Amino acid sequence: MLESTITCPHFAKQAPEIMPENACQYFYACTFCGERLKPKPGDCCVFCSYGNVPSNKE
Image (cartoon, rainbow, N blue to C red; front, side, top):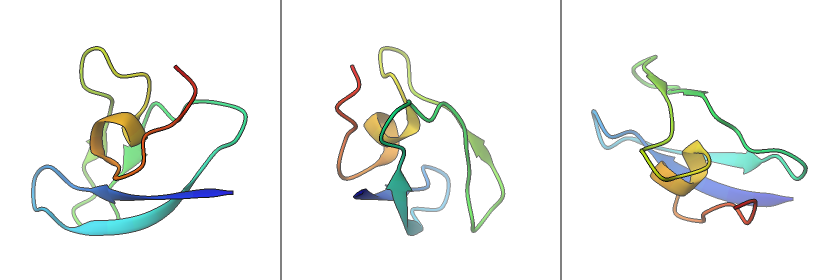
């Protein structure tokens, strides 16, 4: 299992999350503000956009 820390772009709060091993995670609900995050243009998943460890699914 790979862990990545997602940083909320709205409040800069961080949460450790486990990345799925067999799929990209397109949406993520911030555990602090509830905002639904989606990947930035050109990224395959929320871990590539907001995580400290990007996925290897590209």
